[in-house]
Length: 175
Image (cartoon, rainbow, N blue to C red; front, side, top):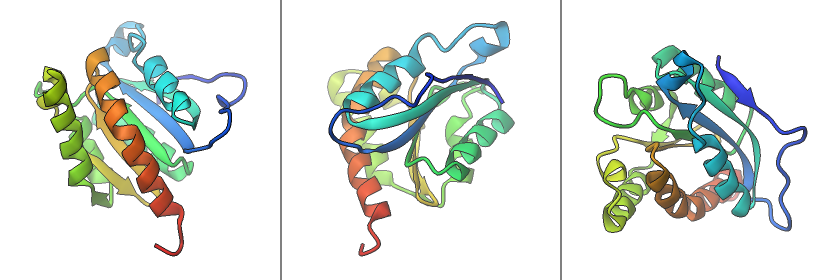
């Protein structure tokens, strides 16, 4: 599938547990033996700060089969949140949203719009032109974030509180 970076144990959280998460970095740099440029580590750091336990970070090439396999593996594995990083732009190799649309059961257009709006307000061009999607597959929230550091920082600041709310709703049998 791709390279996986795991700590000896899942990254632990102090007081509050927002859910389990997995990061899928999509980049063709893996085809040349390079890593994701620190994107997975940055998302991991931001998720841990928000109270998530991060099961790992997977790096895959911008290939429909590799992306689909990573997303399906995460959903089947039962994580609460999958954050994809990269592959959301307009180039022919940017196929992350196309694959995501096949994996999710229900799209959450309001969350997707919030990510773009936040990017626009912050002047993060890559976030504004991102074709990324946010949706639910089974009981897993799947979110596409553009791959630049600015888009990651802004996107995660917007996504995290919304993700916690969605995850709470998905895990509450009364809702």
